[in-house]
Image (cartoon, rainbow, N blue to C red; front, side):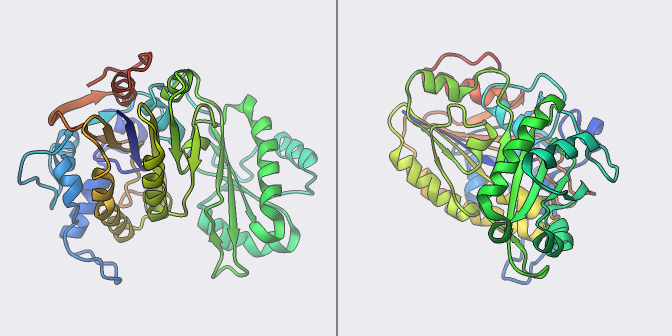
Length: 402
């Protein structure tokens, strides 16, 4: 009896009930990608035709989309009985960021509003930058603005290598991001200055400091690497990780999960450079997960490579690649295991801007015993509550098990 939570990062399925508050009324990550594919979208690299996700559809993805948005996207109609329980959930936490979504999945909705940096240039408070430079031994920083990570590296990467000044920027999320060259600046040094920034930002209620290392020697070939690290504040209450740790269960986290939960109770972590490597790491971790254990995985490429970059065909291809490997995971799920496939927010690549989108997320639950609808859930914490009950852990303080 094990539990596996798989987060397809940013794979939203239609605007949440409060989407208008965030300027996201009408956003629909899966729906708009499927519509674009049905209209003839191709990427020039072999990906063409309707969105093809047969295994996710068999689990009830199209049905979950219909619950969330009132319609099933083209190509996602199920032709037989569902192989899982299916439904969707709207977020209670007042945000559409990564920590809020994951913490709520883990049973802890965020009870407060994050702080954000203004859309000004410079964007960071002068006293913050002064303190950061003094403690980190830096003569200054580059950037100091809102920016796309790939764009600002292309624009300032040469100057960074020449001067040794780190590139500091933010986004619509509650983040302070630091980009630096792995070789000329050094990966360890980048992590060290991120730790300094994390401590300085704690009083400002900023959710994450993100190390964004990159390699290359010219704007045309600068590339961010898999050595990203998130320095997050810890969850405000105990999550299912804490409950599992207290009961001395086997715990494995995949990808950036350990960073998101500030390494609290996240057990052994398996990394991977991209979705395919992360999938392989997840299968390896599942083989080593003991009875009664918890595995929690994040698949980042949907969000970072395709959602934020507004790459519709790339996102479609990533979904199809993930779906093609899904039987490998399903074949490892035993009758008394629980597998839940979900998401943490949306990032509609057809939507204006580069921000996340406030959307409902799918819940596809495979447990070998029960199938059928679980409806629209009020809060992602129902996932954590269900996992806690399945593993016979202490009940979560939030959420209703399905």
